[in-house]
Image: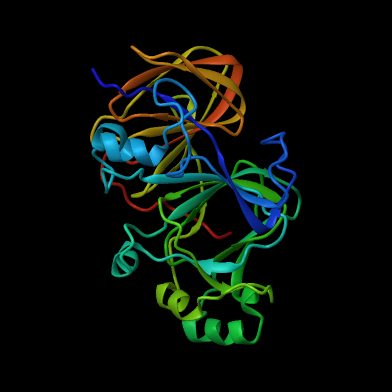
Length: 325
């Protein structure tokens, strides 16, 4: 029997110039003295908070257990495939772009960065910039960067709580204040900053333009109701589902290639129970990893929980249908 068990990870808070010290309603505690922009839930450095592996990092466990932990579907068996974060933008994020797998490999990086954003909370007027306006060329974007007007070439979309947006690699994008997001992405931190509203931070214009696609698949994804829960997005890089539970439920791994699963609590509290393991509880803002070797778990709400479930697709999957309206 596997030594692995469902484990709770401690968030890794990252300082960002565009962040905030008020992380409510996700977290009640104040973290550090500088603004926090991101809470990384499945970073290599995140430490395990329960059971025999307490104090070990996720990266250490991936190196030790490989596919037994991350699953057959993971592109690298010694590395966790998904990086999941809460984002807390208090100011506009830079206009940026991420490389695709091919571009990342040329740089010696393990993978590119396709991502998606679940709008956890938003206020009226909250927006994201997603892709270039139709007909905009890279040459026009480069000129706009030098003329300090690059943000005017983006599609700015109003967003509201509960929406899901798909952002494939090569999409020029930005996030404005007014929302809290849950980001699920390929496990890469390669970002090319194209434009930063005059803030004194390094830009990567040459590299970013090389990675930019004038047209992408990015946009809002319509959720689907499946067996009492919502399928928010299914793509070649990740699957994200949303559940609400007020009574005991069983979660079973999909048939096909195995994958680790991540449960992220949005509201309430739940207890994960698995055969041969001690129960582990998780609250809003916390993530529990279900190793790929654990094919079935039971979730016991305390007394109600709303959560996201992230995993890799068990079978070949196409890019999702999206809209920019």
